[in-house]
Length: 180
Image (cartoon, rainbow, N blue to C red; front, side, top):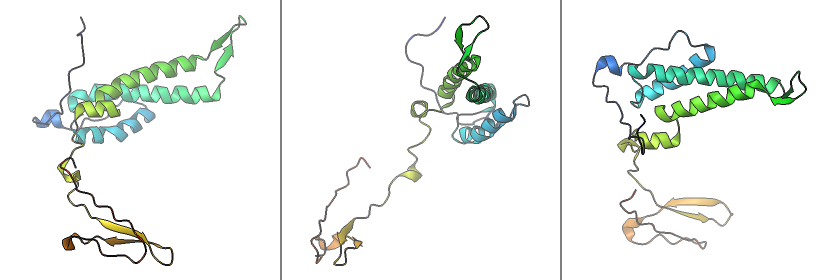
């Protein structure tokens, strides 16, 4: 029986247990394309707390679907999109069906693993890192000098007024609010 309503908000794993918090190894059964995708994503997802050893299978399924999708797209590029069947009817290439099915699987797992912008917003994976916050705002006066060159000069707010500039310059004062 399925649940009704919205999916519950996922939580970031805090890696409390060293065994669960370890970076999972790439499964041996994945082909070369799937392994490349694994290497591309595993350490990034682990570093933000989304991927643990328990999630190894979910990432493996995504990587395998990605690999099959890439293969189907390559075959689709090399063959026509519509084929004539032996009976004379025109039908779509079977590679198109494979590619579409793998895209469905990939998109489902992308949502679970936080690989889309919406999924990352739901995960709240620390994009509002205190280290990334703006700590200093510098005000500058931008003007064009007599030779037509663009110039920037730091705005001296300690005097209460901007220094006068010979060429007609426009100074805009911004007062930062608490939303930064």
